Length: 217
Image 1: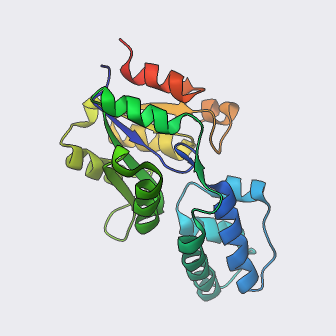
Image 2 (image 1 turned 180 degrees about the horizontal axis):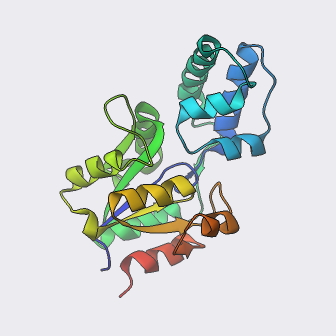
Image 3 (image 1 turned 60 degrees about the vertical axis):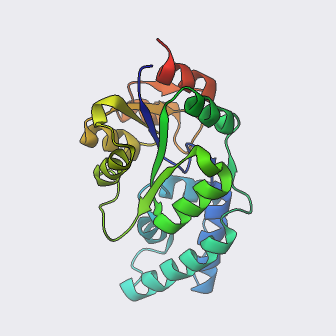
């Protein structure tokens, strides 16, 4: 087995969360009197945590207090809306089952706020993902390596025996900052030319191919 642990990003890697994120962004914008954003705009805005998602979504020059009000509206709506349209990408549940059966530990590290990360992982994956860590005030978010190191501590493994898997430039930078190998996936929120331009060394085009990169001899 090439790796003893696979640490995954969540949005755009394991779960397609884009429609629920866009719905909650536009609910918050409407509540604050701002114009809506398109699904494709939201796709480009995600990846650096919900505070930056809202910062990018509100009109330029929005006062900080109004931006904070919009952020709170987003958080409240998303917690009740995050499982309406979200679903695992095809083949992901089987991939996680195969990794567990092969003895490869699985964890999730995300820039989504911690409560949502834990609830989504429990709801969609159950015991397949025993370690799930999101953004909180106690740890720096990606691309800082802190949340990855926290996951490795829970798994009781060094970075040299694990790999980080994600769909964005943030994930590539996170793996580099953690001193870990990285595998990018092509089915998420960023396309292959973008990933290659940002230093992706290995790109999996399907969960089956990803399994071979993780486990194959």
